[in-house]
Amino acid sequence: MYKNTGYLSPQEYSSLMPEEERFNKGPVAIIECPECIPCNPCQQACARGAIQRFQNITDLPVINFDLCNGCGNCIAVCPGLAIYVIEKNYSPTTSLIKIPYEMLPIPTKNDPCDILSRDGSVIGKGTVVKVQKYSFNPKARVLWIEIPKELFKEARNVRMVKE
Amino acid sequence: MKQYCDVLIIGAGPAGLCAASVFVNTNVQVIVLERDPFLGGQLLKQTHMFFGSKEQYAGTRGFEISNILQESVLQANNIHFFKDTVAAGYYPEDGFMLALEQDQKLHHIYFKKVIVATGASEKALIFENNDMPGIFGAGAVQTLMNMYGVAPGKEVIMVGSGNIGLIVSYQLLQAGVPVKCIIEAAPVVGGYFVHAAKIRRMQVPILLQTTVRKAFGKQSLEGIEMVSLDENWQEIPGTERIESCDTLCLAVGLSPLSELLSHMQCETKYVPALGGSVALRNQRMQCTNKDVYIAGDVAGIEEASSAMLEGYIAGVSIAEDLQIATPEHMTLLQKSSQFLQSMRSGPMGEKICSGLQKVEESNV
Image: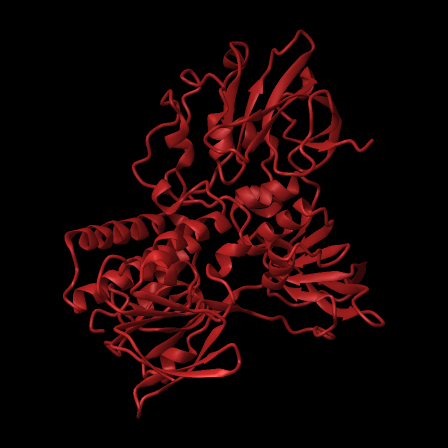
């Protein structure tokens, strides 16, 4: 249970993900925000209305995976860094994750990195494909990380490899 | 020196600045006292994006919110700021607030209404050698690191997994300072899951049901002895262990700074859910002394977002008392009250609501 560990168990995070079929259709946002905290920027950031309108500011975000196209605007506004995007079929053997990143130095394209799971274990190696910036939040950075396909549900963070 | 004003605001943090902003474009003479040499209070140390909604600057970083809040009030020529000035005490027989500016100039401030927005102080933890160099409150770590760019040490152990402990741990990692672990006496993580998840996936363990027994070191901190706790919060013999660290950061809660309210004969009550002694108040944030209003952490430990809303509510309530409230003021009051209620709804707001029930009395 995440209240005892600080991270979601495979069962907990799987319940927040779409069906396999949706993963095969293209990139999609995953929202790991299981508590009713007073916060709603994600819902306002989604131009496609994929994040259900809140009745109350403490509502949980509910995403309609069929309306989401994985653009990642919600990643850059989420103060809890709780949202990321999975593109399962980035290539025949690799997936892509788009994750918020607030560390220095800011990585650059082709940088190698370790892939970390939700509990901080190193589970593999990946590569920075892109460092995305957003006009509406100029200081936010979202890293596009290419990862081995078998890690697409488990990968949640990176640690840059020092040269 | 004698100073006269209509409204005295004590503290220029989020609550005080928002309260002051109510009097922009009015003829009300306002004096704002700020203990620090700068305005913004704790907002200045907050490098993380805020929660809440757009109206409360969600997604904006704390220090940037401070700049936004200061813009309008600094230009108003009816609002006078005394920085580096401590409100030292209220003298009821003479009716003035004594303020000490830059440790040398004394002011006697006479006012019609006062908003006390003094915030809170950090709680300490009792253990052997807890006064050793290298042991900090989380606020001090944030001040050093985020305001002055000084790393507090090379290897940190954090005590407390509430939002402050979690956020400051993350900020330490951002500053390149390793956090060895977070220890927490309770059996669950205290703060928001999303804050805990950020540091967990960066390899920082959270050790639950664990506390610090003693600190040791020759000249400054070299390590601590930790111990596990049972379900009755008692130490389990044989679980003592040593961890090395040169910095111990205490994030074990805040306590409202309500002494000035007692000076002004406001009735206070000790409410653990609100962090300590807080003044009784009505929905307008008015205390039992009708000329005294409160806003922010002094009214009960909560968040910067709620402090801002309470600041607006206290400000507009005084504008009403002074009979200068405009329709815009009333809209602001209504919106702020609604937001505050909405923020406190849901399970995360239960604790604060249970505390508020004890101090929000209909007969105040």
